[in-house]
Length: 144
Image 1 (cartoon, one colour):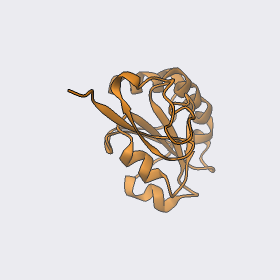
Image 2 (image 1 turned 90 degrees about the horizontal axis):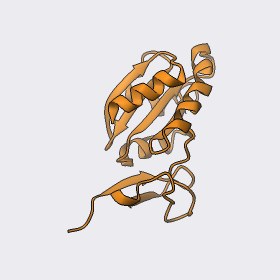
Image 3 (image 1 turned 120 degrees about the vertical axis):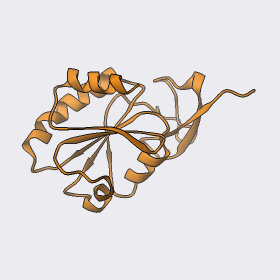
Image 4 (image 1 turned 180 degrees about the vertical axis):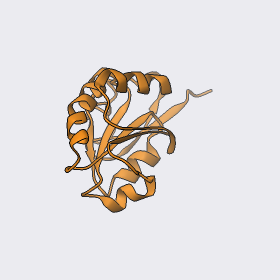
């Protein structure tokens, strides 16, 4: 019997990797570009890759929907980055809603900032409003 696999989208080259559960660690590398799949840092999504990252990742993926004019978003950005560094096996990503409106529209974002947790292409939770890093970490850990 083979071990279960999870799909993880590479934050560098956007290749979808099938990773065995036993190798799903912060040290896992992309089979195409050989860079780390888990960067412990949020990566910026654009309109072309946002759906791929959300739909193809089978691991917990936290997406921060934010806008450049939103002061709470700008205040939360370093906190989101700190939280990502503390949870290296979770994918953290950001999408700028004022730049990629069409890409963000299907997710019905009504306030900013909003973090949405996805797993296996489905929304599992959402949290609106700016939070300090320790509360982001607690929220994410409650989803595991």
